[in-house]
Amino acid sequence: MGTDQRLQRMMLSIWVAGEATARTGRARGDRGQATAEYALVVLGAAAVAMLLIAWATSTGKLSTLLNKVVDSVAGRIA
Image (cartoon, rainbow, N blue to C red; front, side, top):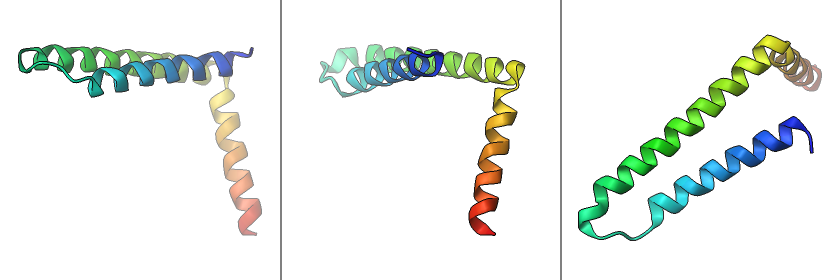
């Protein structure tokens, strides 16, 4: 399994955990707890995204990806 697949699985796991937390029926007294858990999941996802962007920027893969996207779009337009 490649690095991209592992990152996709990790992001999916974080998203699923956030959705499960947000959708569970809780008693009225637990509403603040659900909000705090959701905030922690969002912070975790943001941290993973920042690490991914830092890695992609340092390896030059982000610029390569963006160049391929722009070239592909330009090729379809022309």
